[in-house]
Image (cartoon, rainbow, N blue to C red; front, side):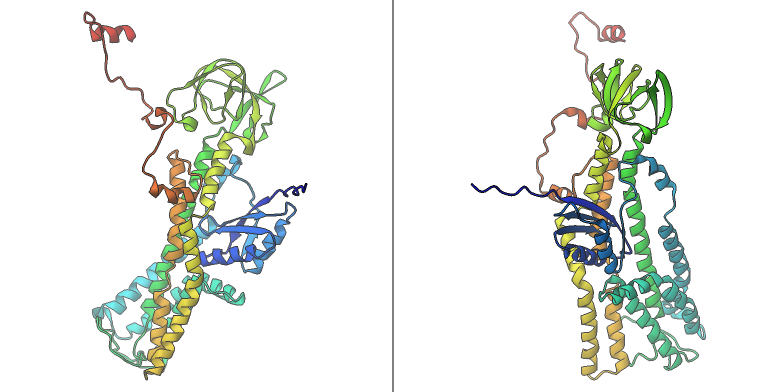
Amino acid sequence: MVTAPASQPEAAIELEIGGMTCASCANRIERKLNKLPGVTATVNYATEKAKVTAASPDLDPHTLIAAVEEAGYTAALPTSGPADGSGADDEQARPDRELVALRQRLWVSVALTVPVIALAMIPALQFTYWQWASLTLAAPVIVWGAWPFHTAAWTNLRHGAATMDTLVSVGTLAALAWSIYALFWGTAGQPGMTHGFELTVSPSDGAGNIYLEVAAGVTMFVLAGRYFEKQSKRQAGAALRALLELGAKEVAVLRNGTETQIPIAELQVGDSFVVRPGEKIATDGVIITGNSAVDASMLTGESLPVEVSEGDAVTGATVNAGGRLIVRATRVGSDTQLARMAQLVEDAQSGKAQVQRLADRISGIFVPIVIAIAVAVLGGWIGAGFPLSAAFTAAVAVLIIACPCALGLATPTALLVGTGRGAQLGILIKGPEVLESIRAVDTIVLDKTGTVTTGTMTLHDIVTAPDVSSDDVLRLAG
């Protein structure tokens, strides 16, 4: 008889990832972590987190952090879990420095880019030396406004990788460089030069054209996309904060027969605490003294309060709707039902649906393919006998057109917002793969009707004996 060796328990580690700018970054980190022996990792760009499962429980988290940093990004262990509600208010109130900096960069870019686009697209506005004014306005946008893209592209280049930022950086800088060449060494800088608005394309050497409005416009629109993406991720994270807000902040603990108000974080298993009528129950526990009715609608969906008495279990964050209760805490912190609900929401936002994995795989090879196409276009135009300047213009056009990274952004953001919005409406989704498979559902079975009511009791009909008035029945019932 052969006895199978006992399986080693797996270690689950969560990391907060910094420096990701597109889905291909997440794909690259994921591949880097999965190369470590015995490690299975999933990196979510929308939540900026990595969930790592290791075959050995002794895996050092610093090994994972070093692997992420070797790929050119930052990683850190979470400072607090979703069950720790003490910092929820601070997180809500604390401004996101990255979001604020992104907003400032966006508004400055909008103010400078709109006149540049107007000058280039409307010939009536093209005064003498307008092209030099365009250069003055567009240069700060392309250099300073797009600086996050340039730094990210340089970091990835040093690690032998290319991301969506590479397309934005190369495309905008190439357009700026060509415009400077055309202005100083071509014919574009001559007085009276104009840009006509035409829907047709005619071959030229490109030395009489500038592309400042294209480079500045792409920078402005990609910055806007990054800003709204960052904002939507922050708003979706409000689902966890909303769940944590349901819990009590302070609790009246009985110690030596005296009530003492303490923060909820200091409550321990075995402590007895008082719950007065109208107060939230601080944590999961068992009633020691008292009889009451508890509103557990946030947990069960039932609109009617449930009668409870000595020996009954109660759940934290539910509301005491009746008499005074004394409860003994049985679970605190991350072990409570509320914390588990919050963890469920976070797991749903951190996971990946099949469609997201497909988008990640495509975005991982998208950038190299685009760069290869741009090089092929450059060679093709030169081989066809066109001037070098015209060939370079066509290659830059390919890079600029491919700049927006909606492919890797739309899917994770949609899943993040969907699960977050569901949690705010009381619908807990176990994972993104569940959200994706709902499209095939044709029948929904409910175990009780209380979860689909409006939560308000309504009188629909009165049935009386033949000689009894319905008004009399209402009067007596009242």
